[in-house]
Length: 315
Image: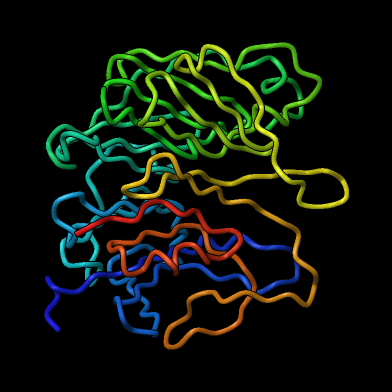
């Protein structure tokens, strides 16, 4: 089987887990039709914490990952990696996005609410002026100061309309390709539950439709984020918590979306997490999942509890 005919699932582990549990990090790859996970970290930093994965929409051999030491790129399905030249202060990358209409345009989201853009296929990058005011409850003493850009999304019908999900910071929006940004989550809050955002998605089937997902569950807007309504989700536990991690639409069926939710697992519960070789039962600490092919949809559906299901890419 030649490389250009092979489709892969990529899974990134960020080393995040509960106290006393094994810490796993790295990037793994499984070929479509195979049942073995392969470690593919040649050229990546030591013990790479992979929190974002993006395969090129037109050339699936090109893959980008976000690590604790910035973004890396592979041009051979992950066999070898090189550091992307970007003046990013050495901060971790939490999100990556290709422009839905122009694959030469890319975005990378960092901690401290920093966003970089490339307009030449990742060769040169510029930092965008993200100067937004965050909700007061998220900047009060004791609040999480990181303001990580956990996910970026673009309107497929108008790629200049961009959204970012900010950890303990709400949803930010740009209507001009990232030149100017606004925070769309201001209000009066008792705590920061409803502005701890983990994912964002622009609905294809209705103009103005946006979904945001986070610690307090799922929210929707029908006016580009100007106003939000909470969607009712089944609680994850007796406390009524609906902690959510990510949201994605089903390829070819934009009215069907997938949501990733986190739950507290019993001490003895185990889930399959990729290891070098065949699947083994380990503690769930996966963070990024990227699929290149419809054949692996079922594997993406059953990703580990902490995994971000990023995309099912058709070929």
